[in-house]
Length: 258
Image (cartoon, rainbow, N blue to C red; front, side, top):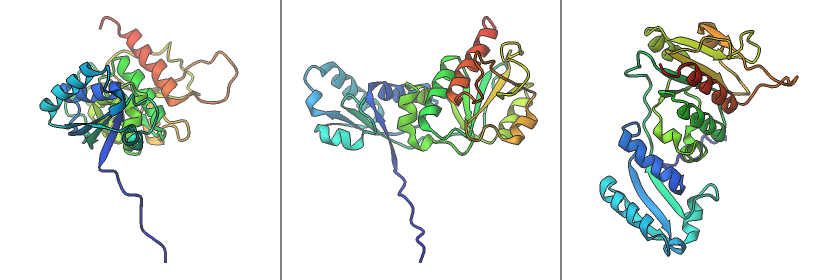
């Protein structure tokens, strides 16, 4: 007989290191993240010389209602996915993501990321988009946010600081086209260079993952597509993270002072 058993779903997300921990605090304070912080674990071997950090975490425990525990290094490593945790682990409840833009800006900048399967790649893309001033990150329903800790770490905390909406491209377009947004797709073979195109706000950039790219619906509904000119004869597409970085900062450059 075939089995219908599947891997159990972890009821919490694990964040490693002080950058991720501070980002979760800041995301909650900003109102973009509704996580419940359950517990923070601090490595016993790291207590000496870290009194100020322990005091900070203890003070925050009264604000957010979590338990602060000191534990052996083996316990920390049993939760950690990487080696950059610095002896600090935060356990949080799952974040609830919106499925639509509740109050789109009249003159905003949004980025729609579709089909990115690797959590590191997604984190790198979110990091660049947030740094370039994106007002929100729109993600397709199929995304690697189940690995929230990895996404947070690779985004240097930007994933917890960003407003994130999980929706289909058609749903996003209905919201944004109503406000006269340009919807611009990244396409390696597009005849128009991103550096020659009008990327003024209000705008939504759409960037697809390397394997699947953007859906046909997304490209059909786009106002136009742009490419990034290469300096070498190279047939492969850039990573989604690289495209997000270049295109997001081109939007920033073109809208300086607006």
